[in-house]
Image (cartoon, rainbow, N blue to C red; front, side, top):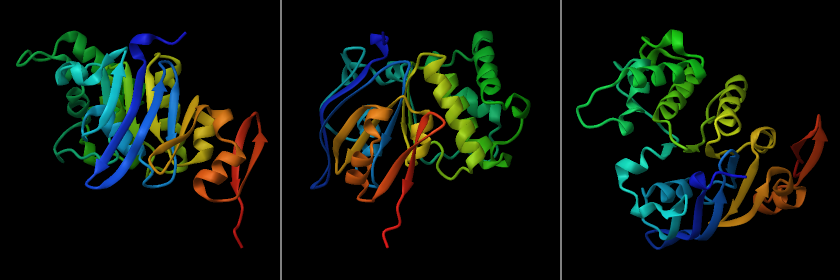
Length: 261
């Protein structure tokens, strides 16, 4: 049974950008111990949904975490419960990997308290988890693209929250690092019991790693549920307006787009 403390729900969530309706009454639940992929065409509202959960954009509706309205949770307390990794991340050139990861622990530290031995052990473990412990003293801007992405995920691990929201974490990564990063993200849910929500574009990556899928179209939820029940030929064709074949290979679904001409 899912941990109710990690249950994240959205009820009737709507967002306007000016006069444009971007989210239209979205209701969805994200369970602990599961990796949920948010999917759909560009501009369908995936990133906006994550921003609405975090309170970064103004929304109507209710977002709850463990049954409590997120709006009632002080921002500092919220940072100890939800971690968010946006699409684009930047840090000063001089920052080392260890310093970047330490930033993730600040949500759990009292003002001017400094870091404890327990904090330092948590930071070190985060680096070991992503396979970058030996690069701790290296400047972030000298890391490869795949290493940098894993570094940002290490920072999220150091924040040590029950809920993790990731917006296109494998964007711009080559095949090897896409799989390495998603293996790590899936482990956060499967092995550490976290509620993980991840925006993905690649249907085959979602089929390989996601426990659940929320398929969005034009600001609404078209389908949601277990990955195999959502990523059907009919659903994919309807949402993406693209003919596809959904095949079985080695026990998982594979999406093969058809040529239109």
